[in-house]
Amino acid sequence: MATGSLAQTGAPVVARRSSGVWRDAFSRLRRNKLAMVGLVLVAALFIMGAIGPLIAPHKFYVLDVAAITENGFRPLHPFEPLSMRTGHILGTDDQGRDSLSRALDGAQISVSVALVVQFVVLLIGLPIGALAGWLGGRLDNLLMRFTDVMYAFPDLLLIILMSVTFRNTWFGQQFNGLLLVFVAIGLTSWVTVARLVRGQLLSLKEMEFVEAAKAIGVSDRRIVTKHLMPNAIGPIIVAITLGIPGAILAEATLAYLGVGVQPPRASWGSLISEGVKYIRSDPHLVLIPAVLIATALISFTFLGDGLRDALDPKLKGKQ
Amino acid sequence: MASYLIRRILWIIPVLFVVSVITFTLMHLTPGGPWAREKRLSPETEARLNLEYGLDLPWHQQYINWVTDFIKLDLGPSYRYVDRDVNAIVSDGLGTTIHLGLMAFALAVVIGIPLGIFAALGHNRLPDYLSTGLSVIGIATPSFVLAIILVLIFSLGLNWFPATSNRWGDWHAWVLPTIALAGYPVAQVARYTRASMLEVTRKDYVRTAHSKGIRQRAVVVRHMIRNALIPVVTILGPVLAFLVTGSFVVEYFFGVPGIGRFYVQSIGTRDYSLLMAMTMLYAFTVAFLNVVVDVLYAYIDPRIRYS
Image (cartoon, rainbow over all chains, first blue to last red; front, side, top):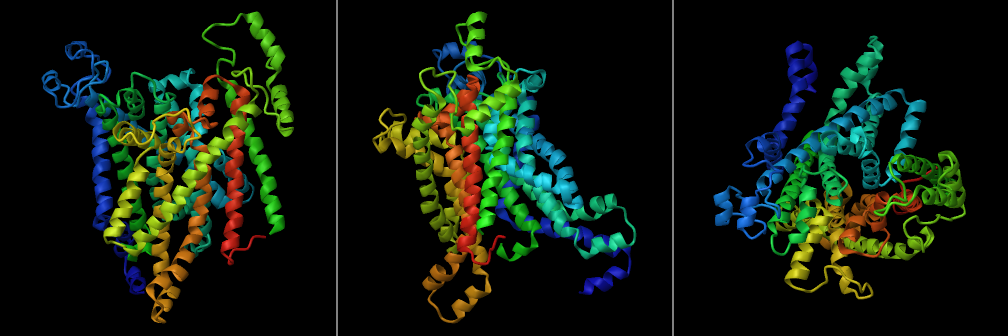
């Protein structure tokens, strides 16, 4: 390859080459329309979650008794004159709580689930996978056996069990039970990342550049952090992104079953389970959170798929 | 192969052991007990009940008792349903849950695979967009949302199928739960089949078949689909496992008399033995289906040999 001789001419060229991989990937990602749609929606969701509750017209837990009384104790519907006059653009629930503000609080919960759960997953999965892949032997064996157990344990059931078990402890009360939800979902999902990192390291450590680094006396730690991890990072990013919809769905399901985030926090899942009773007369109570969940799941899936295609050069020709 | 199979099946035992220990520990860490009801029992009654059911023993002794009974396939008494033991509850509902799961599985295979093939053959054209659009909807819609939408359209709107039923002998009652449960797997299978077909399209043997002048139809049926389905088989195991163990949300919503609804309920009511039985059943199903898939994989793909 011509790049070989180029690389010998000086450091700047080498630097540009190593950033080129990411630039290539990004330009591939930009050409992928679905992935860009996903990216825009994900960005919108993050903005909603971050500043939504601040700009929300009402507090999500405040009951507007006056408006609901005026409406004959029935939920206000979106865009009706009364809703517009009282400032509940998307209507209210049966107790007069503002639908838009509750949906925004749900967005904040989903966004924090997306971020924190994957953080927990990385925190546990990355070091364990790296150690197992690099050291091999006993630890590797132990990890793989443990993975078997975790795969046989139906995820959602374990999450529910953990949520119920620790609900009334100090830990389970933090952030209206949100911390417990994060940890419970994270604890059931790190295995996939650990396995992925392990597999990547197993194949990468046989590569020539690792042998070269060993030959000039680079420490193990440095080889793992400087040479192996950067090469393994692409698939990890993809796995993390594609893991997000699962985490959001798990949180919503927990809330739907009534064992997730505790009231007054309004998860999209709990909004749906509260709204089902009124599905005939006030469908907006279910439709708003349902559309939001669907959009969140779709956008992360699109983005993850796009990232996979962009970061995996083998699939280049497919687009 | 035989020794591999035996090893894999025996390996299920330690897996189940660890799952049972985790569940047992979590369960007993949970505050409250099976006797906490709206009407509080007197401490003397609770003590007598604990003595009767062996709940006064230290945990490790309780666990040993549970294991001993479990090996004899005695799942223990239910602390909630005094008239039935767990064996009766499980055998009453298991058939229904499996029935529902298998129907949804059939739907996932019969609709998902053709949908994926259809998408790949019309790659980047209308069929692809249609099929991909459908699978995106399937992936993005949680089963409880799909269930609500189905009820809204087909029970409240068109009045074709009941939203909840007491007569599960009538096939009408099964339609909506099956579709609600199958939505996600259909989409998953379709996506996987599409990707696998696209992969195969670029293989040398497909090009060779085309250049030999074989009709497109024959190339697709004989060369592409047969090879493309090999990786699809690997996800069918997890899909079936998901359908049998993941149906509790759908069962809860439609009031299907399966065992799924007992899972969440048994956690809430601290019905220890029922919860243990459910978890073990689910874990066994998943572990067993994984073995089945591996064996099936070796059978349909002669390049794979286990030793």
